[in-house]
Length: 70
Image (cartoon, rainbow, N blue to C red; front, side, top):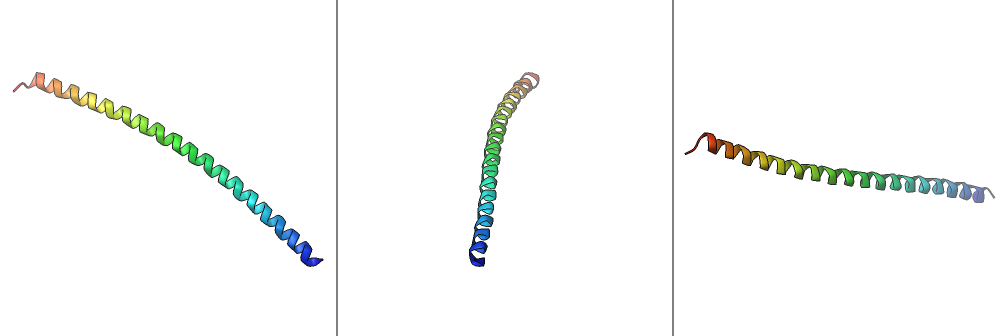
């Protein structure tokens, strides 16, 4: 009987570990999804800033041409 009880205890411990790992996988999956959303938002912001820099560079170039014609 002791072997059977030991096996049941081991089985319960394994089941607890599996549940803990499943919860960890779920949390990591949620963290990954959140990180991906943040990455996409950062890429969108970077693109918008790139457009802004290009526009400002063009305006500076135009102003320089007006101020210092060749």
